[in-house]
Image (cartoon, rainbow, N blue to C red):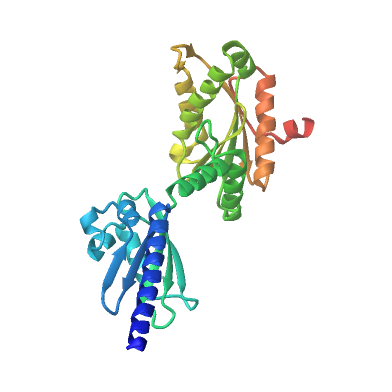
Length: 312
């Protein structure tokens, strides 16, 4: 009898310990920013923390519904999630990232399997939307000019270099247009830096309208822009492009304070392979031609001339 009482007391002690541990783990899961899910394939038990229901936008009475849970995952990512669960890694853990139905909420999942039969697992979910957005912002700033949305100088040079690497010198032609807003220092000094930036933005939007799979446009410096045109024939003919730019600039730029500003640009042109075989050489030689336009009255266009380059 004493032995029975001892066993009962032992079971009560173990049960209390387990209950206390359960309360601790439940408290941790509730105050954590992470969400948790437990699934056991042997008895089809499925348990989610309340925070999991919140994260996946499930009502309280639906947080144990596996179908609703899976349907809350974006369709293109759902199959990847299911495959990760069904095919555990050798170390018993898997990691993946997926989107919810709104396609903007990103979740990171860490799956830990039962080492014995891998029929049960626990998943920890984290909302990484802000992290993803920050990474996208950093990626954007690494490749694009924040003021105009055009390619920045480094990315323009890289993309042009890639295009030249794939080019056939006997068949492909690239024209590089180096553009500079005339008298921009006077505009900037007269209007102030903020409105000067608006002038750059307005011209940048005009340039953005030229971008396509055969035309690259980048902002190289303060008021200097560069355009690369692959095989400038037909509607990509440089005369047509130049006419479009001049026609647009005959209209004033509308600034946020209601002021209208007229600008002109000086453009130098260098062609591949005649004026250079690398992106940097072509950009430099087009810039030299632009300087020649500046020296001879501005608001014009100048094609590559080896003699001008030699005398520069």
